[in-house]
Image 1 (cartoon, rainbow, N blue to C red):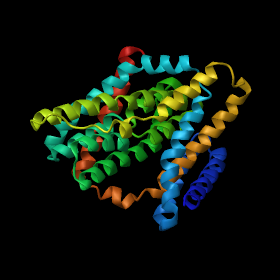
Image 2: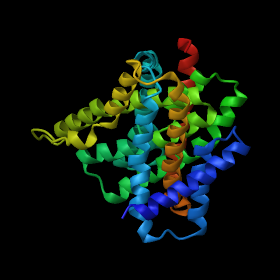
Image 3: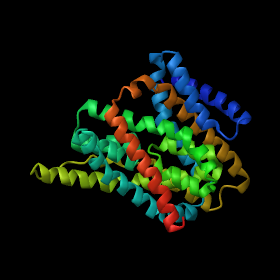
Length: 324
């Protein structure tokens, strides 16, 4: 039953929205994930809440992204996605090149290096799950990689907006930084909208463009694995890997570009999108076990940290070099 978990996430999001009125610089999404993590640390998670929280963390988040599309122009989406491609490709290259090198120095396993590297490069847990479908790692390796990457997602939500303000970054510049240097979609939109509405929209577009690159990367990994094992090929479950909600986001932007949606509705659409994002972030926080994340192990956490810092700095450097 979805209702108990969904109501719990909505309640935390509502409290977060009230908190954001008093501290607008932080924003409801950040308050939502922090409150969720704190509540989870203090109160055991009832089994009845698990299905609804899982639904909120994934489906409600995707719905929020689609809703935000109704306030955007398709031309802006295309221009932003293509215009920021150099930064996106550069940061992905940094993560994928450094992961095996740093992993060897830290003596982490080859599979774990690959999973943490892809999770950092593309889209966190979603990328790890997609790659796992073709390389078939141990469950422990999957859990360890997801825990490592997710830990820095939570940290990024908290530290990126203050750093952006300290650097006096514009809304677009911060959105590009968040979209390319934070891993999971939920954390990208949380940090982006915490910085500002324009930064949130920009970060969402950049992140979705980045997420589509998991398709060629999974295909390349499957081909590499097939050659390494001298087999005919590896069957790739494309239906599970393709982020279909991105198509709905583009459809929403197309509807808005047609002029069907009055401009006066855009403010309301923005408020609805931010609240839905807060519900998703609250659900993620309520499911987060901080002690478990911290027990992930020193070496994987060190690898994740070094990759995270390298990608964040590379994003800023490429932005500066390209004038973006």
